[in-house]
Image (cartoon, rainbow, N blue to C red):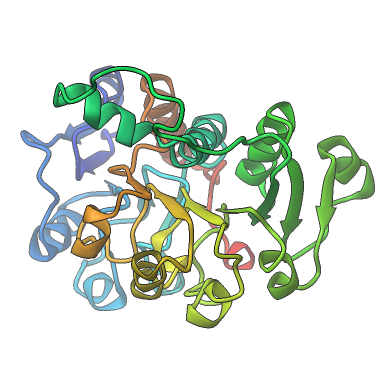
Amino acid sequence: MPKPRLSVVVTRRLPEVVETRMAELFDTELREDDRPMTRDELIAAMCRADVLVSSITDHIDASMLAHSGERVKLIANYGAGVDNIDVATARQRGILVSNTPGVTTEDTADMTMALILAVTRRIPEGLAVMQTGQWDGWAPTAYLGGRVGGRRLGILGMGRIGQAVARRANVFGMEVHYHNRRRLQAEVEEGLGATWWESLDQMVSRMDVISINCPHTPSTFHLMNARRLKLLKPSALLVNTSRGEVVDENALTRMLRAGELAGAGLDVYEHGAEINPRLRHLDNVVLLPQMGSATVEGRIEMGEKVIINIKTFDDGHRPPDLIVPSML
């Protein structure tokens, strides 16, 4: 007698090729639209599925897990971060959690450099003038930005993405510095041409650009708080393509409005889609709608990792991208 197919519920629309493959392998329930599931819908989905394919927009807390029933055994998160899931409670209830690490490293690093260039060279201002038809020709002092080469870049978080940013920054002639929970091995540090700072305060006070590339954990929440943001030079820029919660968004907004910081490039926000409205009206700020990992190739590779995690679990083995407590 053939083994029953695993029941899988997907919470958001995924690339068509990924959805097709999931439907071939499992008893898959796909979304008809791309609206995020409500809290009650997520609980109901876990009650009827063996596997929930969640995304970063699905916030699964202890209370939801307590009402999830006994059926769900794996939450296969479509994304590298898992701060949207109470992993400890899930494990206590016998629910495994997997993610999709390493897939979007290069894409996110590309976007980090794009934001550095966009803010430094005032690209959005130039685009706006051209799109409104207000440009009346070249002028010697119009839209003067700054040179990227020679600037000191301070990378906060030197994991896969931070190192990829460092490699790109070297090509642009930037001077690379970093702060990390653990110092890199000497040969890695030398290959990246990067200088380690044990003190985050000392690093940020001396940098021209700060790039946030660390995950959101209890220890990194508001790591760039009001006090630490005040240490930045008034000519400095801050770029964040990691997690919005790492930066105190209100404090950052106040400094930008007061001219105490030269600019910012943000792809992530402290409260998700609820962006501080005062940020939207600043010429020295570039805001993007979480586009860091938004490449066709990256999103398909993420889906492939999800499928491998589910298939490995279905075959009775440990998913290759299983999240364990020591990783949190």
